Every structure is written in C-alpha cells, then in structure tokens.
Image (cartoon, rainbow, N blue to C red; front, side):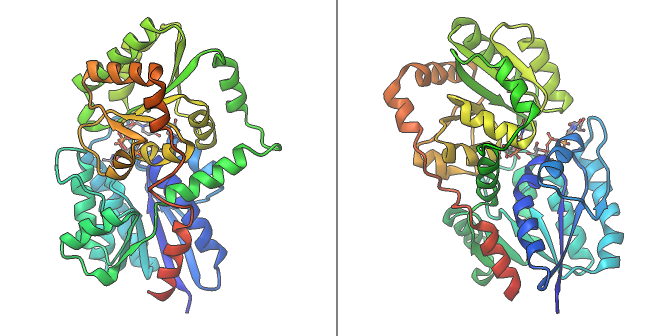
Length: 375
Ligand code: UD1
Ligand code: UDP
C-alpha cells in the first residue's frame, strides 16, 4: 500500500527546507503518494521558492493578508486545512519547524485523526518570548507530533528531556543543508544563468568587503530594528571600504525602519527579498553576514562565513559552540564593535570562517524518507 503523505508549509524558510524532502518523496512514487498544501502565509516570498524548486502545490489556501495578525493566520489555517485532510485522509502530515502555519497544521491534522511528522523538531530556547511566538509554536507541535525529525543530538536531547518517546525521535540532520548543497551545485555550474545575479554583479563593488544583512524577527520590531539599522548606518558611514547589501523582508514592520534609516546611503544597497539561488550566491560572495534569521545561521557555516546573530538567545547553539556564530543581540554598540572586529582582526575572522557544518551533511531527506517507509 502506498502511503499518503501531505506536506504543509507556508513561509519562505519552510518551503526551502521542505523542497528537497518533497523531491525525494516524489522520486519514490511506488511507496508514497505525495501531495503539497501551501497555506501561502507568505505569498511572493513563497512563490520565489516554489518556482526555483519547480513545486506545483496540489492545494493553495492563499491566506496572506497585508500586516496579518497571528490570530488571523491561525484561524485561516485551522478552517482552510480541515476539509483537505478530511477529504484526502493522509497517513502522514509533515510540518516544518515553528511557524504559525506548521503549528496550526499539526493541530488541525491531530483533530482530524491524521498522524503528524515534525521536521526540524526539538529546537528550544525555553524562553517563551524569544523567539516570539516560535518557541511556543514548536513546543506545541512537539506535543502533537507522532514522529520527530531532530536535526542534531542537542535537539533530540531536548525532546527526551520532555519525556517524548525515544522510539519516535530520529536524528536526521537539517534538510536546509540538502537544499543548500543542491542550490550551490546549480548556482556554480557553468551553464547556470540568472538575471538577478547578473544585476547583483552590477550593483556590488568588487573592491569593497561585502556585509550581507537580513532581519525579520517579531521580538525585534520597534526599538530593536531601530538599533539594528542605526548600527548598520554607522558602520557604513565610518567604513567606505565596505558595502552593505540588505534584501529587505516584505513585512511592513521591517520595511518602515529600514527604509527610514538606511535609504540614500552611498555604500548601502537595499533590495527586495532575493530568490534562493541569488541569496546563496550572495552569501558565498559576502565577507560577513549579520542576521536574525534561523535558516541563515544554519547555512553560513557550510560556506565558511562568520555570522553575527542579532538575537539574545538561540535555539541553534551548535554553531555558537562551534565558533562560526556569535550572538550580538540588538545592542547597537555591540553590533558595531563585533562588526569592526571581524573586519579588522584577521585571527578572529579566520577562527569564525571554518567550513564545517554542525547542522547536517546533506542527507537529512534520505533519512526522513527511510523512517517514513517503515512508519
Ligand atoms: C513568518 C514566521 C516566522 C518565520 C518568518 C520567515 C510566524 C508567526 N512567523 O514571519 O516564524 O521566521 O515568517 O520569514 O509564523 N509579506 C508580504 N509578502 C510575503 C511575505 C510577507 O507582503 O511574501 C508581508 C505581509 O504584509 C505579511 C507580513 O509580511 O502580513 C508578515 O508575514 P508573517 O508571515 O505574518 O510574518 P513573518 O515576519 O514573515
Ligand atoms: N533567503 C532567501 N532570500 C533572501 C533572504 C533569505 O532565499 O533574500 C533564504 C535563506 O537562505 C534561508 C531562508 O531564506 O534559507 C531564511 O528565511 P528567513 O530568514 O525569512 O526565516 P527564518 O529562517 O528565520 O525562519
């Protein structure tokens, strides 16, 4: 009997991390009948990923609204997904990580009697306000899930401490590394052409050190983002030898301070969110990455790029322990101080730019698929 598998996702990072898993499951048509439901919690940023990985969703809830609320997303996923799972009755619903989409999809599937597999399970800060609301999202999903695909030993240990049955926990590595390896091999091949990358080449100054910036966390909205932008402005103004590239997240709470504080500076380029291959290309080209993103923290060690993380806590301690990631919070002076140190202290730079990744080896999807085959 073929197992019916429904992957549900809605935001850019979930799509990037579920894409290689979808592809692997689709390659095993004889064992799995695989479908995708996108909630479209993100619209444009999701569609960029679907295009690159050639994924055509079977269902699209198309729920994104401008400046949407958490309650609005929860209500729309809860009601929108129910008829789909009730009608198709998947054996397994696979959700990813800690977004509103993934938690509500897990709960909806549980209400409808479907089993839930949680990809990227067990990440924890145990601080319910940081990251907000993601820490509670993943704890709730962890209670509901029947299978837990933990990326690392640390994340598996968190689940064990919460008395989750050991037999349901599988250490797989993070699927983001599978996605990254696939994308790097495409982007670096001679035949590959991409207009966006060609455009980036025209706006990036090859004589300057490139600092790549991204940011979107809800707990940083308001003063946190003002501090971040002022720090970047001060670095750019005092260092004409660097250039900052900032693909700005489409959330209006991010767009506002970034445009107000950073537009018009000669060596700062504000651009729209980049497609995944272009972002991989630019990560590879960057000297330093400054971000509050979860996924970027996981990808950068594979490319040997030092990362300053603008958060006070991280559910991804492995790269901090490993030495490639440093937490700087949203303290303006700390962001500036550590950026200057990385620009000027060669020894520190070399220590933080090891090419070795604690999050995976690019085979996470194979491991997840073989667990599902026996489940
Ligand atoms: C969401 C996730 C967060 C994840 C992040 C990845 C939750 C609660 N938050 O946060 O965990 O780390 O995605 O980026 O699930 N927008 C667009 N077009 C897009 C995407 C967003 O216009 O393609 C704008 C819309 O106005 C939207 C707003 O951004 O209402 C916020 O989107 P939302 O998904 O609620 O929050 P994120 O900050 O993106
Ligand atoms: N990313 C992208 N284009 C961009 C910025 C980021 O494709 O302009 C990718 C990045 O490589 C990573 C993912 O998006 O895989 C991270 O998404 P985000 O930071 O929005 O979410 P988080 O990982 O924090 O949940």
